[in-house]
Amino acid sequence: MEERWTVADAVDEDGCLKEDQIKSWREQGYVFVSGLLPESLLSELRRDAQSFYPNPEDANVADYNHFGSNGHFVFPSDYSSANNVSLHPNMLRAVADLLGIEIGELRLTQSDLWPKYGGNSLEDRSENRDQRIHCDYPNHTLTHPPAWDSPEAVEIIIYLSDEAECQGSTAVVPRLGSDDPAYRWPIVHTPGVAGSNYVDDKEKAERYMRELNPDAADFRENQLYAREVKTRYEMGDVIFYRHDTWHRGTPVTQGALRLVQNMTFKKAASDWVSVLHSGWAWSLYRAGHGPEKLIAELNPDQRTVLGFPHPGHAYWTEQTLQAVEARYRPFGIDMTPYYQAVNQT
Ligand SMILES: O=C(O)CCC(=O)C(=O)O
Ligand SMILES: [Fe+2]
Image (cartoon, rainbow, N blue to C red):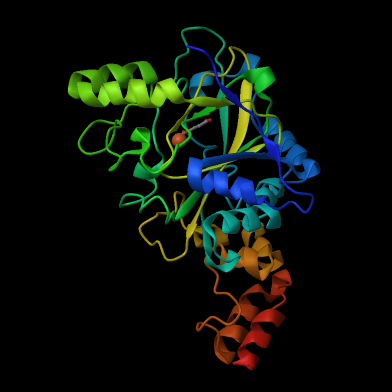
C-alpha cells in the first residue's frame, strides 16, 4: 500500500490556531501544527526527559515501553518544563478555540511524558510498538463521545523528537464528512469495547477481531487501515485530535527513542470524562512544596483548568478568600483578581 503523509502547518504569528486549522480538527478529527509552543521551552523539556531516560543503547526496553513515565513527568511534575508545557497560555487558548469555549471552561485531565524505545533487538516487541487502530475514548470516559459536532475533549501529542530520526509516526484516519463509513456510530468495533478484550498489538488485535467478528475485521481493514495517513512530525510539532478520532502509534526505529508529551483537556461540565492520574491535590503534601508553589505562581486561567475556582465563582466569599490566601501565602500567591471579582458582585 502506498504510504500517505501529513506534515505540520504553522500556527499564526501570535501562536493562535488559524480558522482552517480549527475547522480541520472539527471536521477531519485532527489538526497537526507547528510553532505553537516556544522552542526554548520544548528543548528544556526534551533535555529533562533525555537526562531522566537512558540512551536507547543502555535501556532495557521492557522496563520503559509501557504507558507513561511512572509519575515522573505527570502533572504536577518536579520538572517545571513539563508543567509549563502543560499549562502554556498558547496551549490553553488553542484547546479552548477547538472546543469553541472559554479557557475557564476547560479542565486538564491528563499530562504525562511517554518514552517509546525502538528496542535493541527484533525480539523486543512491546504491545504498543505497532498499535491497533483505535479511538482513545474507552479509557478516558465512562460513556461514549457525544455527537460529532459537540466534542467534549481534546487529545494532544507534543513531539519532542523528529520522525526523520526515529519514525514512530502517529497514523490518523481523516473523517470525510458526516456519512463517512469509517466514522459510523456507535464506535464499538475495536478491541476492549462492548465485551471484546483489550489487545494493543496490531497483529494480535486484528487476528482476534477476525475470529470474533469478521465484519468488524473487514471494516477495520478496508475503512481504517487502508485510509490512515501518517504524521511526518518534527520536534515541537503538536497533533490535536479527539476521543472519537481513529488513530494509532506505529513502530519506532530499532535502537532509537521517541519522546512525546501526551495531554487531554475536557469541558468542565463533562464529569464522565475522568482525570487519568491521581487528583491534583494528592501532590500537595509533596516534600519541597513544589506543587503548592506552582499553584501560587499560576495565573487564574491556569489554576482554573486544574479545577481551582475562577475569580467570581460562587465558592469565593470573604472567608474562603482569606483561608485560601492563608494556605498559599507562604508561596507568594496573589489573590487580587479573586478579591476584585468578589467586590464586583
Ligand atoms: O504514540 C502515538 O503516536 C499514539 C499513541 C496512542 O494513540 C495511544 O497510546 O493511545
Ligand atoms: Fe491513542
